Image 1 (cartoon, rainbow, N blue to C red):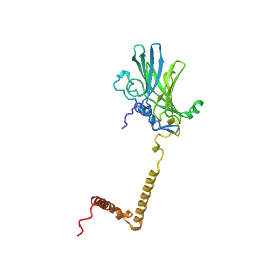
Image 2 (tube, helix red, strand yellow):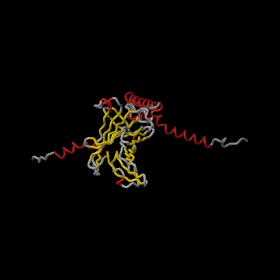
Image 3 (cartoon, rainbow, N blue to C red):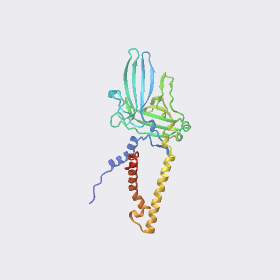
Image 4 (cartoon, one colour):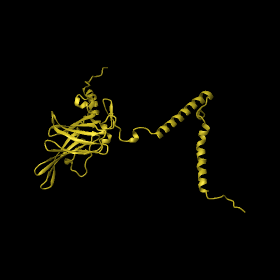
Length: 310
């Protein structure tokens, strides 16, 4: 009997979507590979704030950009839902207006720039795209060392939002900060991350083609292609670790070779296969006798015995 055939359009679409869904969701900071070059940005995990300030005659507009590329931003306790970054945000902007006359601050808008917003109605998927500077099509990029990350998913006022972060190698970058003013009298603040993180600087936040793009420059030693993960103990094994490993391998080789020899020469089986099996089986009893001897020595250390001189 011939089974009825059904067009596999739905199933085929699901299989086609699986790779894109996996790419959209996955952004593992500890295991980034671009052009077969590994990077570890896990030390940059955590929320980082960068500020864009514009002064007016009687007010100040302060836009706070919060970014965490490694995981979604956590909600701030006690902050109303409409005044906080939406769930799933990796990059978010909150614009505040401070009335300098009345000393009153008002939140004007909250803009989701990049994150996983497909389930919340704020936009789409993160869709991370990595580019190695040395492999870029731009000759200017090829002269720099680092990686570029493009993430999106946000949507505000009918326009798609994106963030492009350039992680640039700065082997000496530790804990520097500065402020600069651009031509439009916008003050861009740099965020000090930690003793390893370096600094973040806003390059621009403008409309580009079909989206509004926030461009950031992150100078950090973790963008260097020979960077370590910041833990000196994880950079290599010490002498003690190698010593333990060599001893373990030596004992294992001795037991394996000795067992093989006993099997072929004496047709030994079970415990008799193990070299010096009788000694090994006596180890628990020897240890017990040793512990008992130590206890007796401690308890009877101040006594001369049960007899006294006559």
